[in-house]
Image (cartoon, rainbow, N blue to C red; front, side, top):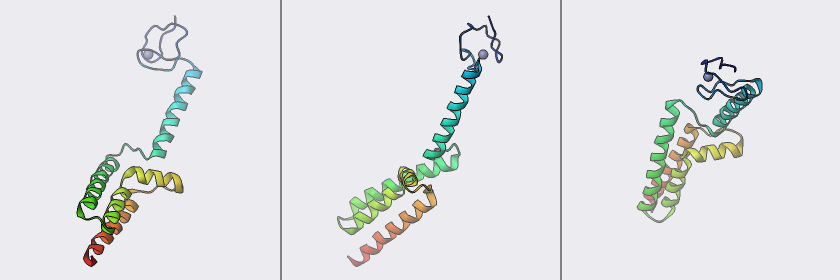
Length: 131
Ligand SMILES: [Zn+2]
């Protein structure tokens, strides 16, 4: 019976991965694991999922800001300000950036979303001066 190269566990000859440490036990299994890791990395890059804390924090902050803007939009009045506030609130949400990034082929980062948000909210506030 062969042993696992990585942890030394005695293996049943037909296993693809070591049940104790997960080490691939043949070339086919090694390739499968490689492909899986590459696929996951590509998927993470595509969906904008990142392990950096800064991005996660910015995403969380933009959810809060977007939510507040939408609620404020509905609370303030039922006129053009509501539309502008709600649009601004929705525009800043991370999934909208990912969706637009997929449609346009370019990633729509937090900065661009923040600018769109600021413009729409400012327009909403300005509209309030004239109503
Ligand atoms: Zn092992």
